[in-house]
Amino acid sequence: MRTGYCLNDNHVGHTLSGHPEHAGRLQRIQQRMQESGLTETLIRVPTAAATREQLRRVHTDEHINHVHAMSYREGYLDPDTYVRDGSWEAALHAAGGLIALVGEVAAGRLDNGFALVRPPGHHAEADRAMGFCLFNNVAVAARAAQVEHGLERVLIVDWDVHHGNGTQHIFYTDPTVMYFSTHQYPYYPGTGAKEERGAGPGEGTTVNVPFPGGVGDEDYILAFERLLAPLARRFRPDLILVSAGYDPHWRDPLAAMEVTLSGFARLTEILLALADELCNGRIVFTLEGGYDLEALAYGVTNTLFLLSGHPEKVTDPLGPGPMAVRRVPGLIDELCALWGV
Image (cartoon, rainbow, N blue to C red; front, side, top):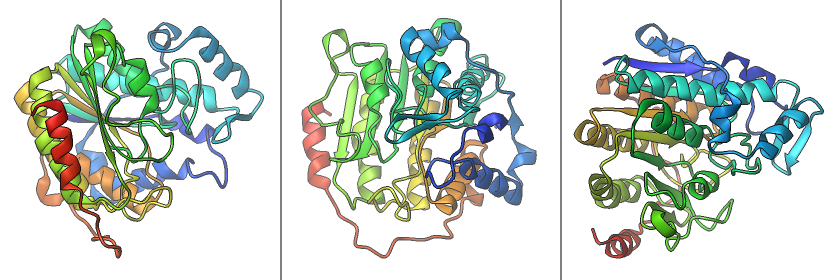
């Protein structure tokens, strides 16, 4: 497999000591990639800054200008979301790196890829930053895939433990982008109820799986197999984008789920099979959350092993968590009935 990755080296200019979303996250991933030999086997795609034109497809001028201005003052855009002197360039290259990787896959020069970029993006709304996110990387890249590469229908799958409110709202009335999210609920940011299904021409292209805390591998896998797979086949995407947050892992300090590294690997396998079936294998992952550095690093490298065709190298040194796993098959039944699958 021709698997690519991008990494915005300038992310180190966007970091804050003591904050959970810091430069050490990508640095530990890089270290693990080197330890596992992945760095030598993958194709690195250079990042470039997203242009204002690309950002304007999903963000307002006021928001873009505000992030730019505040980045050079340093401070907070909301109680969780900081900016430093290097934040503007890091955010432009995070979005631009994912755009570049999507372009390589769309052109057929790569089979798939993973954008190892920060700051993350799925909480960023059209008109404001929030939840550690400055620009909505996956939304900007989805629009670039459509406008610049002629891929009409994009499926965005978000397995981060927090609901991607920004991604949902940006595409809520758009029938050409399906947004599917599994997340802990009710939890930050408070959106993502099962009744949120899109509006107007986009009704039926927003799909939320609001899990209570404590859910583990089995029900995540059920949601992907019983709900996502048939809905994806109904939608027939030209490209799959994945907002990959590894904070549902049982060790994550900002969440209360019980997913294991083996569970993330199985979700990846399901997505790869759907991409092969529906869109000629075109699938690109982008990093969102994940704040336990070991779970994050092993989760990402396992995903990269699967993307590059090496399932035998997937490993789970952390094993299952010490807490009892909460099963909610009835919720999956209810959602399947709601969506008629």
